[in-house]
Length: 217
Image 1 (cartoon, rainbow, N blue to C red):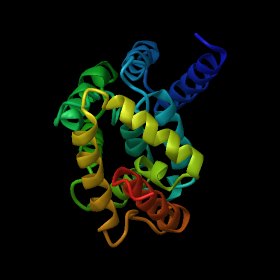
Image 2 (image 1 turned 180 degrees about the horizontal axis):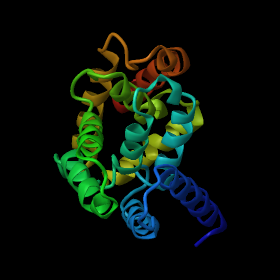
Image 3 (image 1 turned 180 degrees about the vertical axis):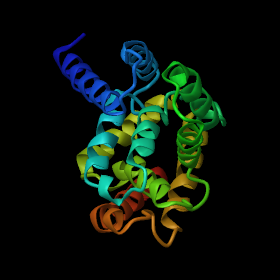
């Protein structure tokens, strides 16, 4: 394990153990954390990996006060991409089911489990979030779109690598469809914080990437 990966592992371990400790759960967090690490470290993951989770958690820190149930949102962040297969259309459903299975020994309340599963399913981003917690998770998950140019270009490269099983033309067509969908929305982000912090740069990044995909620049 490289020093960078070791540092990331240590930081996330401390965050995860501290978070579950704050929930006063009797079960040792080691097994569930080990499972999280194994899934997010799968070799095909170039973007949807532990670094993505760390980034989401960092962005969430500045939005936590907006939520009604910050515990549920944080659990959803940890588990929302635990199943990730670029060829699958059921990643979110499978991630929600995996959350339930992995956390079963912790005896979480059914209300909390349902809330977390609903939040994970909301990261399909197929409809407008129905709650403030889903809106915060939406903005956190898509915050990369509003990142600085270098970070955004690296994100684009990583996404292309994850979709390396697709030839160039089908990939460009699918990616362009996603970009047009985002650009066609009145707002990409759902909270005032997200719109202030990410919206202008996100639109610039998406327009630039779409032009590159279409060979216009």
